[in-house]
Image (cartoon, rainbow, N blue to C red; front, side, top):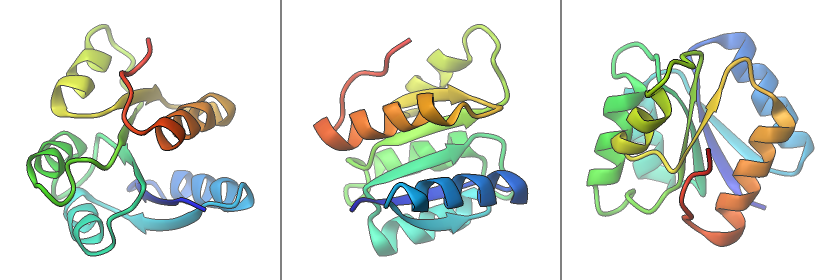
Length: 128
């Protein structure tokens, strides 16, 4: 089964996401900030990254840009997770290199569809 890197600084969100993904059969690794994400992504090459965009140390915007600029990690699909649901935030996430975008609070069924679509077909354009 696919390996997903969950990058989230909120302990409750990290725990909820990891437990629900593991129950679905995914292997899950955790990172609490963008710097930890970069290290884990380079070392382990996950199949997909769920990226909180508001992170300490190195935020999700910068981490995604760095992932997509590096030859070894640029093909890893990234789904932006953010509480910011303002007009233009989705476009900003896609411009930063994210393959899709989802808002918090997380609606797990919707997020799972996006995960499965990206893992099942590789990188496809994000849907509104």
